[in-house]
Length: 237
Image (cartoon, rainbow, N blue to C red; front, side, top):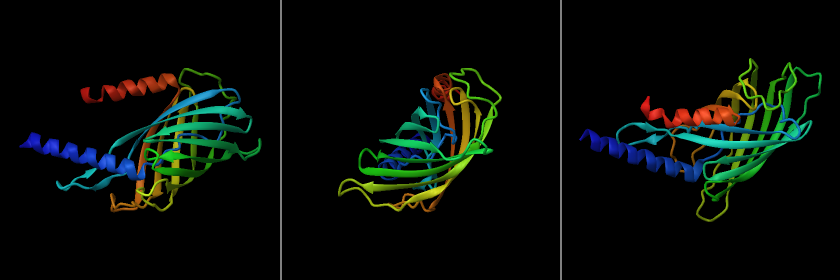
């Protein structure tokens, strides 16, 4: 009976995860400081975040799932870079532009983006305002060892999806703030982050419109490999 209950529980979680992914999968996690990638350089980030809790199951429990995003950014010039992000069932492109001057203690940037999510059922639009502590030392190109750099970053993000077919649901804008800290560099580092968003569930999957999204992001191919190995070994622990 216990095994049967566990199987039922697993099916319920899977169904809810698929349902959620088809109706409200947007990239909550930012995983980036306001400082653009240096011109001519490229960085890669893998973000793992906990999808907001979905509705109660028949067993009186609530269900969440671990999501994974990948983003690659290219330096365009001294004040801007561009990124491509693969999210669950979609792809988003964005452009970061540095607004602050050289004498500012904090870097401030805007980052608009657009793409599609939910397996092409929705067009996606976002606008992000970013601020982060300015590095005290010049950027280290292709740094592949952990450094003592600690860069807090925070900001605001607004997201909106628009249906691309008659069967896709209409939804309200999602808006909120985020706070994170990057330890290390953009080519070898890790960034814990938490976001708090107002996100109305169009299909009533969640009872609460206020969601908290914790995340861990790793930067650089070596750190991504380490995190993948940990995730694969998870059941062994």
